[in-house]
Image (cartoon, rainbow, N blue to C red):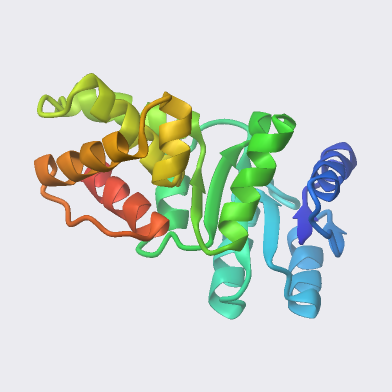
Length: 212
């Protein structure tokens, strides 16, 4: 894995968390050019990238993530942002969120959750920050309330958007796997979205709904 951020403290902290979780970090980068050079050289499983990097501190990290996805399809990307930037999240996930994560920087310090999100991305899944999901769902309720969904289905939908599997959703909500399956089927039916077994396609379906 490669960790890219202009803050040495954050780079070292993320590297330590990943290594403690059993991941190998093959390089660090302080700017976009260094990130691209090391990504092309090492072709890591995942590149963890600050969305704002030198020289302009605007969207260099997002640009680098898009380039990596295009040039190195075997490398997943996890973009870190200091605050919710919904447009960037939607742009990054695009039409194929497989192997993509968008997390708030605060999530890094929840070591286990962060490592799990990185693992999902490395395996071709998706990881969307829970706060981003909540923000999207909240905005969606304001403009077009999800009146057809029950409170429990809202909870399940939010966890689906994070990239959680049915078993992970069951564990989080302390319900049975069978109950989750029923909720998922009901959600897809009510939202007129085709169910799919792959986690990243579930995220794509949720994002398609949130965009509508």
